[in-house]
Image (cartoon, rainbow, N blue to C red):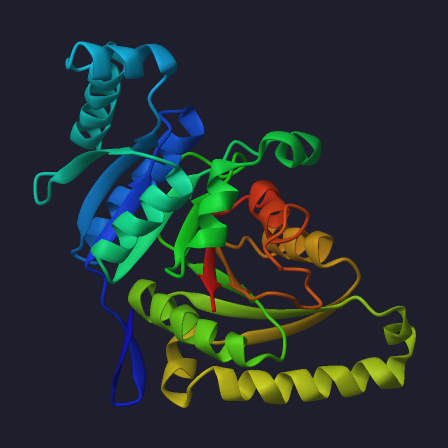
Length: 296
């Protein structure tokens, strides 16, 4: 995904994989996918993964005919691709048979380097615990950057596609340095400013001297994350907040009019971004801007 040229991380997208379920929330994600593909001159793959119903399976096996389910889904994905295509680029419709968790990630792998774009309905935590979330399962499975558009993200227009302000919520890990390359790359591509936020959940941070020490150490780490060549255009601003990571990140998005949130995902961190239903996915669901997740 990233290549090094003169010590700069450069985005080199070959494809944008838009995973759709044909819902209104998914459609907003589709508009983002089309704009991303056009912006980075990448091919747009409009994909829907499905499993045959028992009735459709019996038709296709017994009569060796195409089931109505497959016909209908082919029609839907073709219409969506037609809607998202532009004069300069064509969206390619793909109907994938199988579990979306595997089918979408395999499609991205076979068209690398890729970015996956998807929407989520934002079901309640209880519902996700029982039936799971397709979007969440895809995020768990892919190693490619994924742009997720939640239910609170405003409908895309030509104005709000420009990511004027990016929030990078991070900690002191080595994974953060990898994600920082993507943040800087996006900022350079879109002419964005960058806010870098660290949330401290320890109650001991009520001590002003201790908090000052944490801030000082964090700011020095941020200096290492943002290359010198990028500081002139992205004007990075650093913030340390105390409290629940979810609440502080959502507040920052609202208070600072953030257009894109970037999260670095690993197995565990003090931000609780361990790819379980209660962590990063709830931030994605509640965010009023798209969320780009970088998993390492």
